Length: 150
Image (cartoon, rainbow, N blue to C red; front, side, top):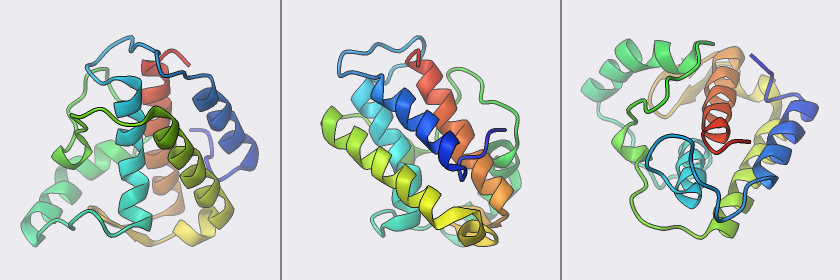
């Protein structure tokens, strides 16, 4: 798994994002490119903002037991995988704004570095290692950028 905390890898992801335009079509799935960018931003909103409600104890237990191993492993996501309701973006978004937000989140995450994230609690899974955070970040972005051919 590539290391999203490495500046060169962050820049490579940003280059891929910059290859997108507002008319990009998915190779699979139902999201438009603006919705995909907004969807990817949810991960970072859960870290840096307070706009998403934390799951209750039962849901968090289920997420940790069932979803966490899938999300933080190095195994790639399958095409058309289901997503959590919090990540469903059903309305149109501003492509330029969502793209800029995602790039800003990536730069912030990279500048904070892996040490900042080591044993940092996630919104849904409890404490994660820096490696688990990296897998969560990189795998998700890579999956959706491939979805749009970049």
